[in-house]
Image (cartoon, rainbow, N blue to C red; front, side, top):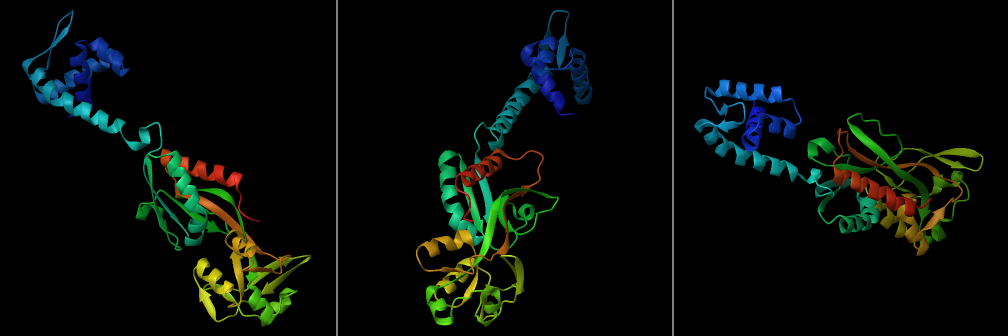
Length: 297
């Protein structure tokens, strides 16, 4: 049995007319008539008595209508109340972001977002690993990458650039000296990421390849920032994470005319045909906010 025929039957029963049902459903009268005939054949009973003036339900038709009509109405109501079909964004928005960026930037943005869209509930997971959005049921991720994201199963929107610069504490630099050229970095102690490799520093008219060697390696920018503040050595931090410490005098830029190639912050979501309203609303809110307050250079 084609369940769509039940919807045809209910429309005919409520309109007491094939023409009225056809108009309501936006289909030819002949298609409605064929659908009812097919339903009657499938059930083996006559559901509608047809006359030249009107149609009327048979006893079997009346019994079927009383059972089916409430169910169809309930289904329509349930579908109509899906969060993504409402005018305003609503429902649970599951996000993931790296710890440092999520803590320093997203806390304020999410607070303002849920104030604007109170029907959305945000579930934020902070994690430094690359999360599989589909397998783990996330709507979107905020990722930092020095490369263009090319995963065809995802869609990515660039939110803006971020820069990496070299920092040290006033106490460390007073003790070990302030480098004036990248060649002097080899005599300094480093705090670096676990996967750190020799890197390129781009400066006035030249590029220098510099190794990182030190007694502390980590996988978290907050830990790195704290150890740099405590004088453990020098290291790279995103400007947006370091600038508040520079303003307070707890960190000092090292070789400010030299920089390491940075990257971009990306809003990544699953490549669905129709982006849910809650996801699109959050993406647009991020773009609006970061346009007004871009990342530190």
